[in-house]
Length: 393
Image (cartoon, rainbow, N blue to C red; front, side, top):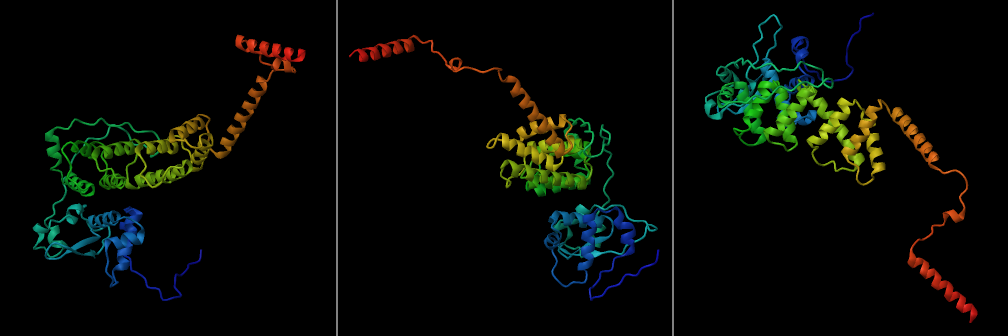
């Protein structure tokens, strides 16, 4: 193959990206994190005021998504934060990158870095002063889940039993810096302190279900976006994700996106108001249809249309579920399969109707329904006598 050259015909400007980033750092990062870093490089030489909200709007992401990306790159020694003398965030610094021949530092406690206490950092001039006081997170041994790994959407995983946490267990958990940071994130997003009765649920997801930090953060955001700021609801969602084999933030986002997309289709077809949050029961229905039955969105839409034809004003998700269960039993895989089933059902009804028709002609006399009522007979007799008397007169 001949070699090619790459050039430009206009006066566009270009940003310089380290080959170390492309060769080594980018390979393990998810797409959103890479996009945020590239955009930060683009903003490096601009003089405009930059905010997290502005970056989030540029990518149509949430501010939490942007902060998560920044925290990730901080943990990889790609970025650092600059603070003023009062501990207020002043800027983001892009650090020199290294090839694998250098010893890259282990992941730092980025959440604690972003969560600097103003009072304790009044003499800090920049991130370097803070990082010296930031200790490495402890390595905490957690029990291994009793279920084996399976891909999302395949065999449901066995749920580990929730331990009966003692007060000592909860106190020990609070000595774990990662768990302490997680509790802080939950309290921040919930907008209130976590109660002692909620700690077991939070610890169960962290310690037994072993949700990674980024997946756990997304779980909290997911619940808050639906107006559910309690640990019990969060635990129920976590259990559902665990059973579905979800292990990463992206897998959870993919499932949520699919669920929301199908929900919009279902709500529109059934005439359900779409400006409310989807309930957990509705999510379970949709997950059953898409994951367990493996139905496409168009098949689910057809089921909704069938339901509304049968019950124009009272079709429900439960009724739709009954239709889809029947199609699943009949191994439906496409709209063509549904059309074939409908034709077979119509032919069966026509045959049953034909078999119910009595043979031969029926006289009008046989169609007459005689009354056995004595009163009716007396009335007829009186009317007959009255008519006879009129003729005689």
